Length: 195
Image (tube, rainbow, N blue to C red; front, side, top):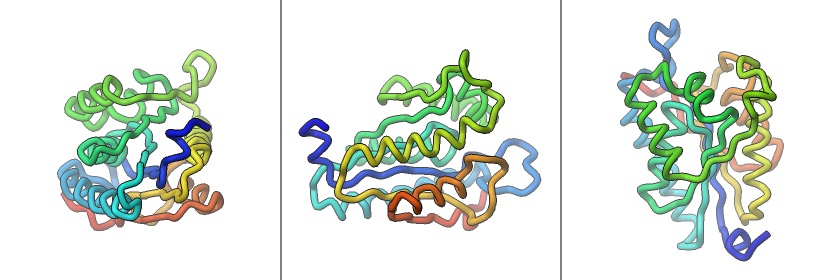
């Protein structure tokens, strides 16, 4: 571990719902609620930054529309470096987790890919991009990467409605995996989002 990594006081991992796809039967993150979600995420990140008392804080999150992108943008505004942790190569990831939210979110994702370090778990040539297993593996990979920093405190900020997900590897699974690994979990109630 290099000196810079040892100096990190707090590691923040984010997991949360993405913008609802058009026609979603039970709304969870309406597109009109992005500002509200950004405010919730911003308050949580600022609180964690205050707890570091000026020492370095770093963050890790995926790149999905909605929560992930808002987390990276919030940290950027606060001077907290983040790494995009993509389950699939950027183009495949955007197709699965960004595009259905619309072109604005795709543009925001692409900008982050150019301005932030990004790591990719699965090579689309080696992994079936339609498989849900990659999302479960990505959760563990993100958490283990965060723990490897060796910070004094590890926090998962979860924008979550408290319900089961649409499939394996969602926010519920991330909350359980983080709890098992000793992360403090800060839950932001996605059930309160309205658009």
